[in-house]
Length: 193
Image (cartoon, rainbow, N blue to C red; front, side):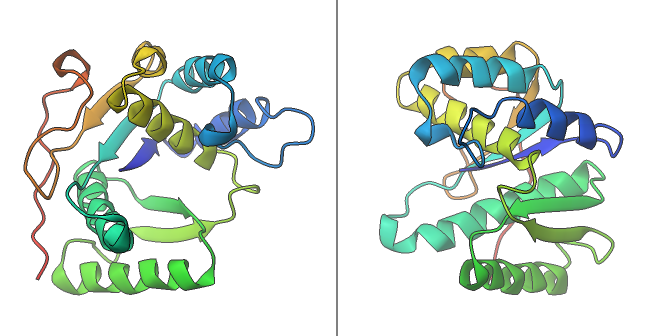
């Protein structure tokens, strides 16, 4: 699964400031999996307070050996949904030069196929330096926790956030934790060659 926190250009700095204020002494960045249960609740609540739109894309049915392919497929679905929302720029967290180059190659294919217009800027930023990226990590962490049977963080997210869980590109189902948590807006289905 992969998520986007959709912000207008004038909301980005506020999101950066909100997320940076959540750092504990000694932390370089927020990372959901490294946080305690009590802190996760606070992170979900404070991230929801940003009042953004959240879009989540999933891709099921691939084992760990094909995790990068599943990520690329989910990323493709997510980017198509962002294009539909007239998003002008997408920033992904850098995962190092090799994986970033894989993303860039995939993006070039999306541009050639017409899924991603030339006008949409897509870049990578270092996680410790781009605080707004942490919001997407909290969102996907809360979503994953709900899928794993701990829905309270996801409920915190839903309190202040418009959420769209896109239809899975692999199985055409919603992987929302519970029907009441799903905004019934099917995501674009993108077929790769």
